[in-house]
Image (cartoon, rainbow, N blue to C red):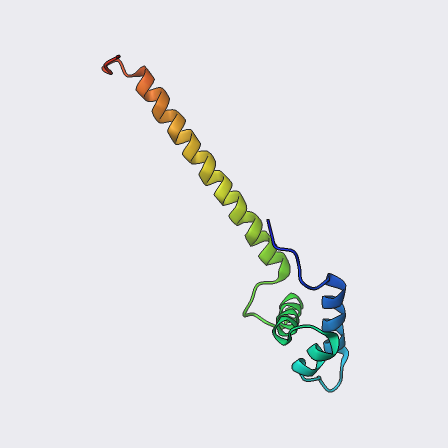
Length: 103
């Protein structure tokens, strides 16, 4: 389960919009202080917004990150199911083995 978010989504959206619509661009540290958020958090939000808008190629978009997370969870579940099936297969194979000595 994911950790709860420290900042509400509305604050994130507002902060990014303020940065994007400002001309000239404000210093991130100053804007973060005015909004009461950590400067690195604001910097990450801005970078993610730029990736979502296709302005950056160095990080996945939000939808790509969500799909990757979903696929990793699905992959982990399939691996667990595969391990259970292997264990069941080994158990039943040993039960059907005619050369196995019975106690």
